[in-house]
Image (cartoon, one colour):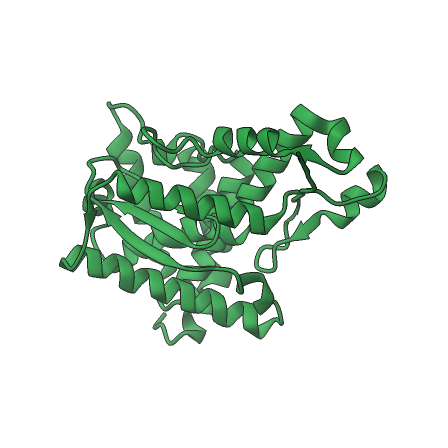
Length: 268
């Protein structure tokens, strides 16, 4: 059975039609896959992960994850509405869950499916530190990084078939499962360095829009780096920019972030 997941009639039209611009950072990326299919599969895999995990409910930490997550969500929705892009988020069904696990990790699946591991909480320390993490991870979803990475894999493996207009369901499922190694493995998409840098920038802006002080992002990432010293690097940092590059990028984007923070009622 063949299913059409891609757009285009010829390479030039194909590429232009599938080019997506991030409304917060301005970065353009090639996103060929059908987002509704990605959201459906992401939702299924999120449920599978929660079923196989110890989900923490009703504690102060669990409530903190939900509260910070909702502030980030509300800030994103307000911004997208203000620029006439609210339709981008209409299919999102947000969820914020805390998972009992010593891994220093957090992630967001397409469609706003967020998981935070208890192992990262000693490093986040407070709501603002948690907002750095959740803003970053939500940004991956909002920026369509999952679609971008899946599209890159599709082009590498099935370029000719994509231009022909369709691939099989089995081929599509294989690429999705490769991109999201869920099950016994952590549900973390292996993003590229450019995508991680964009999530740093976008996450910094989102946390600021939500009223969290973006200046606290630098101490958080320094704590994250310190946690990896002398030990196996946390999965959360495996494909991220090196510490110097990250701090430089944060400092570069901090003035704009502070403008968003001030507009949200933050004190400079």
